[in-house]
Length: 472
Ligand code: URP
Ligand code: ZN
Ligand code: ZN
Ligand code: ZN
Image: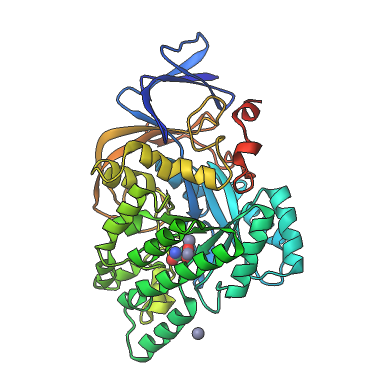
């Protein structure tokens, strides 16, 4: 059935205007004043903003990591994402040396296809680069529409790839039309610092932060940027946590290198002192890169405001405090790295960013949705409100005041890192391709309703998905 959303204020990355919006066959079919139709369901959005659905370009759902598996899978994770105003996620498909990329991708399809309640795509981890991988990669781009590759410069003895692999991946991505993503921390130096700390008897969660200082993130970010320039390729740095890394990205951009930076809500509002909480509670805040000294938050907000960082990912990678984070009692290096962050990503950026005057409303839409759609080959099908685009929409009440808590969140874990934080603004209803997933704050979606999305090549989205074409 046709739907008309009336009386809302539509906000895109470039415009803010009062208008009605008609949805047909999952797409926005009209935007205008006083739209009406005899056979349409009318949805009143008075007093609310209508945003394009959030795009979370960085999630780890149902992922084996740190001797356990993340608590949230594609069902609970995408449901929580939808409650938070996110309508598309891009999850990281892990791969292994010597195993075909195709079989790894199949594993990720099996984890997601009957569970996701919103649309999703995959990034592909690169652990080695040789003739076989190269051949399979070009097939993967065409058949799976996976146009972003992830290289870990950290997690030695596990995910870490060497510089040769990173460089070859950058060269391959340039040729194939893909965007390379890096987890930028110097894993070799971290490995040494961790061993040293443990030998000296320093086992508490705070040593997670102290053995991964900002310098190791800044160094790896600068190295990856330099290699990108040398390869004349393109790079997206995930989860930028500190001034050192943000500065390296800004410097490289000033030199004309094609480099982009993502930060995460946790780095914008939490700081390193959380890892010092007593009774092992610091473990709740163990993820990589670690939380930093508080002054870094201003640097990150400023980088978002000035466009030196462009996106916000959640880095959702959730583990229960009881039973999973526990694995690291007596040895911080065994605490599974990651946190439950998918649900509060959009609201925190609104409340702490827009409401407090750190970014504009249009920047908020760009950072939480539009820019990721453009970088990852989803635009303009997703990431904006336009005739012909998917009706992925969030009806957002900017005045609701609430307190974040594990008691009311929808993630499957037993704690929320933002517990007790008072915020303003909440998604009231969320639509995915024209169907309600959240209606008046209640879940009405269906596991399996989320579709896998093949994405356009890097920089080619405008050619592959012109508005005229997506109207068909
Ligand atoms: O600690 C984190 N961030 N866990 C997820 C994996 C990663 O490094 O992104
Ligand atoms: Zn990472
Ligand atoms: Zn080692
Ligand atoms: Zn991550």
